[in-house]
Length: 330
Image 1 (tube, rainbow, N blue to C red):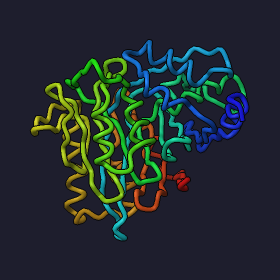
Image 2 (image 1 turned 120 degrees about the vertical axis):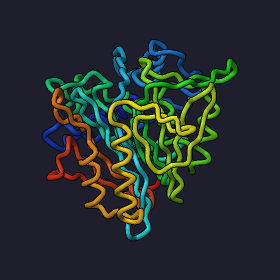
Image 3 (image 1 turned 30 degrees about the vertical axis):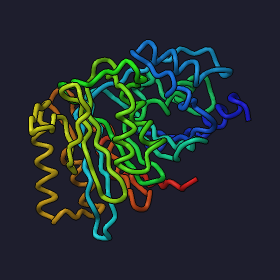
Image 4 (image 1 turned 120 degrees about the horizontal axis):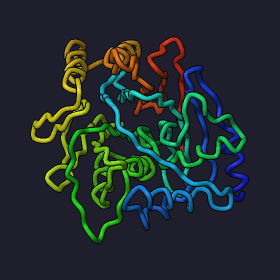
């Protein structure tokens, strides 16, 4: 099947999951990620040019406009009473940033379900995709912009913004951006250790100078935070991440990051590290970012079960519309 037909299938799969603007989509065909990893992108302009070439070739003359923005996020790894590994994630941002949940099955990689902000693709309240039409074409770049996700091996990853980062740079390594690092782990890593080794093989540039770190966990229950500090990739063993530097206990924080971290830790301590589904949902809502100026900034909350490859997502703290999903191995 050619690129055009796969694009039609992908766009036809788009469905709206709630009134906030949460969408789900299955990507069909090759999004060219293996080729991307051979050339990478050193900056935002190069990134958009490469995506235009790899994703939209033979489909449409479209200019990619990828804006990777930060937010006041929280991510944690825990277990439920059955011993299954749970990865919970809030994506907080002051601007309306509707989620797109994307299923991908690359020919040379692992199947995954990821979540991306459609704000990255230029969508907003008065401009949302609606299936097989020109207005939906930008969603075809979604494989390159995941903010979080889980793959068929039970490896989950999410990025969170931080106020500082000091990554290394090696002339002989390919450079990739924040969200491509997430895609790298989802497509190629079968464990936390593999994810770390993969990330060490590439330079990283932070899109629009929004510095980030990454919480990565796998079905064994191992959970680490990957940070870039002192011109090196640092690995911190932790189950909880928010918007502060954890390496060496620096705690260089944005906003109420420490408060959100402490709330998660207290919930773990109070329940012996075991949270059921209802407790996990309540915790995510409780630590969601709110402010008098912007109101409810919790754009989406997602729970990935790394043991069963099932999960639940909901948008904007709306627990009346819990959307369940599952990932089948390929």
